[in-house]
Image 1 (cartoon, rainbow, N blue to C red):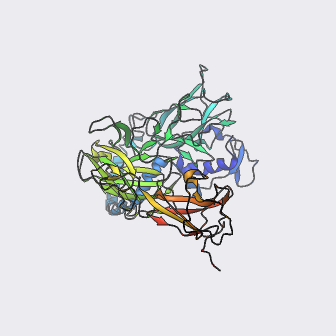
Image 2 (image 1 turned 90 degrees about the vertical axis):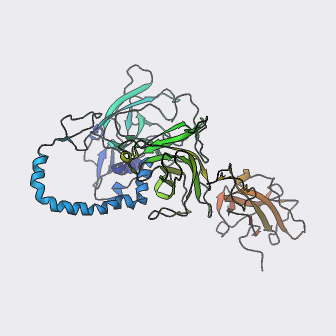
Image 3 (image 1 turned 180 degrees about the vertical axis):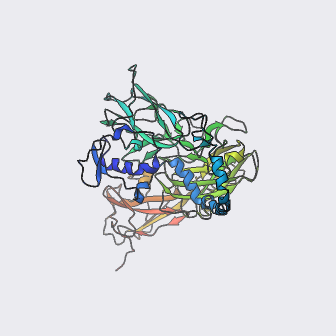
Length: 554
């Protein structure tokens, strides 16, 4: 389906910050004035005129990879605020105003232009880079997978040309179904997608995998790349893998980097580099390596689970808001920062730090998000944190890091720090392992369900049970008992930490309780059923009343 007018307007408004600026866009030539006041014609439709003074015009859901970089700097008002110290530099420069005449003469001896030899507009005579460099980006998309043929031409479109219908057409001169084209773009983020037949058709990569970088997971999805030099892209229309390949499974905790069937969805940012590599300590397992080459930002790092994020949100609950990972760093004292965030909203994040104490050996670091980095946002229990960014040697730029290599492995929920095998480290859990050195999120807790049917008015034949998503709304398997005949039914079962949705049923689910939809105990609706919810953090006992949120009474 063609991008809707409202969506195209939204994408156009967000393009100010989300996309790299194209040298030219030929898709906007239709500027006839037969539109209502306050609108202009773009790509055949009337859209609102962009008001540069509107703060929303610069609102952006842009690159999650850069969001990690820029959000990390949120923590660092220290990084941006460090410029306050430069205020003294600017003041000092005031004193140098008297030297401006001399500097003017020096400026006359310098030439401005693009100084990057890899750019397509490199100026060999330029001595001062003026930020005008552009780079060739070669697009190549295989269209042999779609069920029905596409109407030519195949093209790219995006905010860089206000989602134009034409102007960035690819070609397929040998009719092999692979369309190609090369265009020039400035460095930065470029959001785009493949379209065909003048935008009659657009690829659909919603929920398909890591290539759906800009998405809400339900109504739209777009690709996005970071341009730092000449780039060659090879894609498949409408999917994130080549034709005939099975889609990879989404990454989720724990992360070990050893499973070839998982899309680990890693992305370096801030000019860092990242790859899955052999373990530096030997063995056959794989780990994540990250380096900061010359030119890498002090806030650079690597994302685990870039948009659309991890397969499930990290199961933080009160009292259990920690992640641990193993780090192999070349220097003791290296600061590592970990940020978790909402993959769809980069403003929702929390950051924690830990310090490497041993050089050139594996060490488990624990990051406690109840103790966030000073000056950064605190943990918010209403957020779904499903994306992780790791900042090795946080605050150290590539120029100062000397191409040091940092290795990361075994990213897990919970705390760690010991030398024992992974296991449950919570003494209150049913399966506590005192020998475990790293919590592997396997802890389970005894939950006793107690429900009073004394005022229910329901006739029970033989059994009362709990049911819910934990057993796919099962009919049996979690039966309670009323051994003393007092109409209070009880049963104890073990569950992992986190939210548990449930309700009470009877006689093989032929009867279910009717929880008041607006009651204090109502947590949500599944079909026509209103269910309850527990947040399990330790052993628990419920005191529920069938179909009520309060105890039986007069």
